Amino acid sequence: MDAKRAEFEAEALVHLDLLFALALRFTGGDEAASEDLVQDTMLKAYRAWDSFESGTNCRAWLTTILRNTFINNLRRRQKRPASVAYEEVAERSVFAELTESAAEGGFFNRIIDEEVIRAIEELPADFRVPLVMADLQDMGYQEISELLDIPVGTVKSRLFRARRRLQRRLYAYAVEMGYVE
Amino acid sequence: MTDNGSSRGGKPDRDRDAESRELSCEEAAKRVFEFLDGELPPVDAEKVRHHVEVCRRCYPYFNFERFFLDYVRERGLKPRRSRDLEERLRRLLEEAEEP
Image (cartoon, rainbow over all chains, first blue to last red; front, side):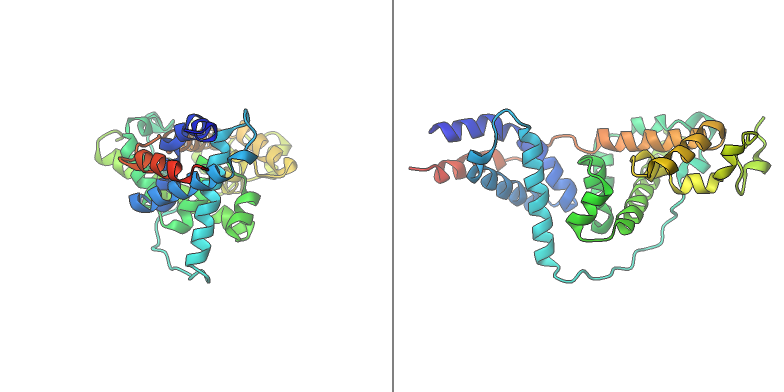
């Protein structure tokens, strides 16, 4: 094995599981598409490995490549974004429905990881993608707006609705499981 | 203990302080995510902060939303192993290796 590949495997390949999780969130849980996305990301990173400054944040570099690759694929697929009508769902915070003892939100902690992940992945793509960027990649509204080519006001409202939907779904699950009265 | 009647529709519960009257509960709540995301201009953020600090209805509400956002951040990205991706990649990298 040559030195470049050994170095790449040691520094980049260790982030594979995290990249796969991120790809799943972006694609809405599509395993085959996520594997392809991670594969494309890794091969791009490998080709550009000489430009990567050793010692800087490799994980951040890889997640950026993955995100940009995902966005580019998305753009290629939908040349003109269709306007989709979304089913109306209650968009009030569940907070108003909580008893005093549940008001701190501790009941969310009893929900298993798989359910949280499923709830994110099943959000409609228009809501899910800004949420993944803001909440799992720590990006600001302006940056998301530029990447997705939508106005900042749209980022704001989609993020708002995405979080509300996610919260409501997890709350409904917690109620169903008897975690909250 | 809580005078719900006076807080519905707008004014914070304890709005003795003139500054807190600048923002109603509704106005503060509308900005909750922008505030928690650090996306409000400093002047507006200060107004929200001030309102929340003195409003006994908004204080627990903002805490709840903050808890929820932290929760999503913490739980939403648990690494996940793909069955054969690593093997596939090692093979591809080997093929891509410069001669």
